[in-house]
Image (tube, rainbow, N blue to C red; front, side, top):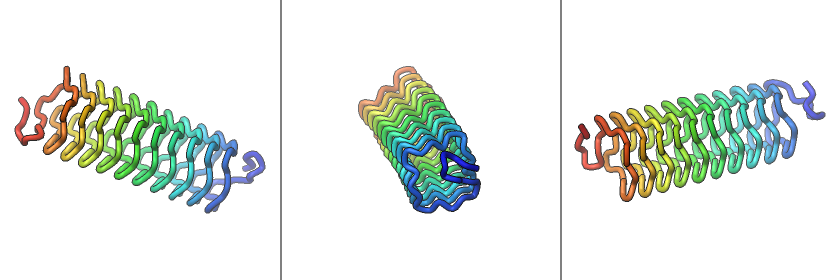
Length: 221
């Protein structure tokens, strides 16, 4: 399959390849090895990257809207300012990835590993993140309004100044999380665990705390 003369095929070996500014929209890159590849500013909208290896790849400012990245390895990848709106990232590995200022509106991140990732100032409105691992992630100033964060592990995460208005945090683990100045108005925190969490100046107006374990260990009735 030719893609703008690059001759890229599924399962291609593209370790360290320079594909910056490449137009790879709708390309089939499933299973491709793109470890350490340069994909800055690349157009990968609607591309199939299922199971692709993007370890340490640079996808800064890339367009990945509606791309399929399920089961992909994006560990330590650079995705700052990338557009991942509507992308499928189910069960992908984004641990320690840099998603600073990334756009993930309505993205599918169910069971995704985002542990220790940087999502500061990221936009995740209405994203489905059920079962995701966000432990010790930097989520400061991130926008999770309306997102599904049920059964998510947010232990030790930095959520200072994050927007969680109307988010579903049912059964979420928020032990030792920093929610300083976070906006949780209208959020669902049913049976969530907030043990030792920092809720200083957090806005909980209209939040449903039924069955929630509060920072002091008591259970809200």
